Each structure stands twice: as C-alpha cells, then as structure tokens.
Amino acid sequence: MAEITKVYREEIPAMRFIGKKYHDYSGWGEWFANGWFDVVENSMGGVEKILEVWENGDGYVGLECRKEGELDTYWIGMFTPENTKVPEGFDYIDFPKSALGVCWIYGKEEDVHGGIGHCRQEIQNAGMEISTDEKGMEVSFENGICPRFTTPDEKGNVILDYCYFVK
Image 1 (spheres, rainbow, N blue to C red):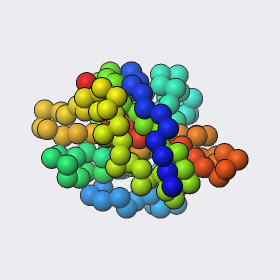
Image 2: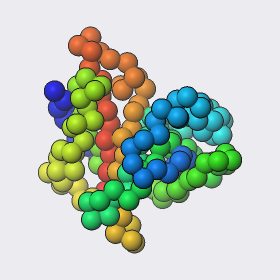
Image 3: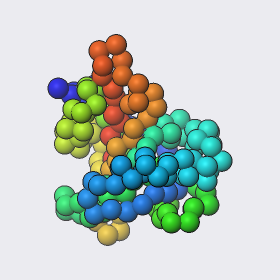
C-alpha cells in the first residue's frame, strides 16, 4: 500500500518539456525500446544540464493535461532547460517560471501510481491552489526521479513525485 509522506511547494525556473503526445497512458514501452529518453537527454547536452537549473529535473515524466477533470492529452518526456533544441520527431511545451505543489508517494513501484488520486487534495490541504491556463487546462505530472524512484530502499519501496502547477 502506498502513502503520501511529504507535501511541499517548489519554485521552478522556466523550462521546456520535450516529449510525445498521447491520448491515453500508453507509450512507455516504446520510449524505453527506442531509447527516446536518451535522445532528449542528448538534445540538452546531458542530464546534468537540467540539474543545473532544477535539482529535481532528471526524471522521466508522464505529463497530464486535464480540462474539467477529464484527460485531454498525456505526454511522455522530460523537462529540459528553456530553449533546448527539439529533436526531430518530438514536440514540446514551454513552461514559464512557476511553482509546483509536490507529493511524495511512498510504496512498492506497482502501488505508488495508485496514490496519485490523493495528491490534488493533499496539495490543496497544504494551502496551495492548483493553476489552470487560459483554456482552463490543469497540468500535473509524474516525475520518476533517480534514485528516489529508480532504486528501491531496504523495504523494496520507491518514492514517486507527483506534481501540480500551482499559483
């Protein structure tokens, strides 16, 4: 069973998200099979380049764009420094300097995704207000950060960061 162990606000710089759009949660297998995370990392000059501007920027990201609670678009990709050249075959979204409401979901890898549904309320309980863009779209994302998410602890558990853009 997964549990939320930490909720906090984090200021982030302007960044570019590079990835591919989907209409559901499929696509992760092809990202690993095709080495697309490596392509994005290489486009920014190595993962250390994003770490220079955002300490939690080295994660593989599942980004959700929702309107009125319904999934509009799902992206898989990575955050990169702003103005990173977009590799052929990829798309991007530029995000201005902003803030995130972050939840740490702790548990077995197969269970942490089930804890996502509680993050919105936990972030609001912490006094943060979820942002929407000019079209009423709300953006949130799973941020699988190394080593929190990629290396299980002594109990076999990981931490998945789940983030909402907040005001």
